[in-house]
Image (cartoon, rainbow, N blue to C red; front, top):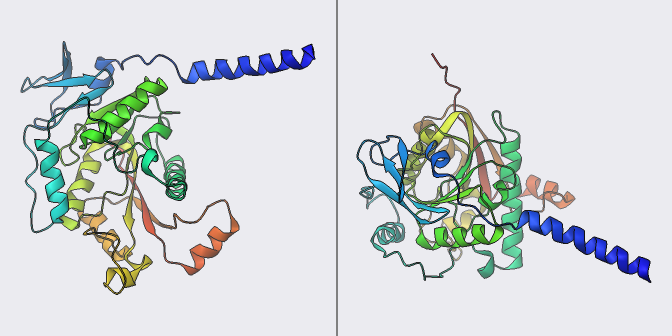
Length: 327
């Protein structure tokens, strides 16, 4: 009896120790270290540590820490949206994100939060995330470098990246998304994650990110996609890699043509030819495109069968920034 009890206590002790290592007291990320990877979104100038946040060395704007792990670094003016080129619902949401009042008591959940998603939806997101990190692992360059998601939402990629990346930037324009991620990272004791309230049209990065993701976001039309891809290109460090995705028009053409109920709103999907054209127009020469069916479990034989008979749900694209020669 005592032997069994002793084993139970030892097992509980090991579990508690593991939990203490994982869920520890979160220390605020070092502002000086964070500033190494950031620039002013207005001036593209370096940032320096300030008593209340980070300060642009050129225009002297101070970007405040709203929480110990939450930095607000928005441009002074929002981007001029081409109203005829983007869905009206996106334009309204973009304007509202800039006009909204910051309230720390707001506990609204962001789109994609696990608390509001079904088990089926979460399983699909897991398959999607696994594919993203498989592509990044196979990419050239620093697999353990600084990671960023420019449209991180509820953090399906950033919280996975935090397990191995020395520094993770979780970026989103949605106040609900960054508040949610900030609170979750603090609860988990993650001291290598920086939550950034930012606009991906004018991101606070210049050639400083080794690994970047931007998922479920290239869905607003060519005008939007070209500018977001340009932001990704300017953010990547020399030899860095990014993974993005596009919804495949041919996955469900009857819906696209209006012959079945539309469940994609005003959002856009693309043929592979259109994807290739967008990538070229954005200045990317080194990329790989592959099809992906998120409904299928990649570990099962059925996934191989589905890949042969069904059009891909999405096109997964790995982008590689050219290595720059230092002179």
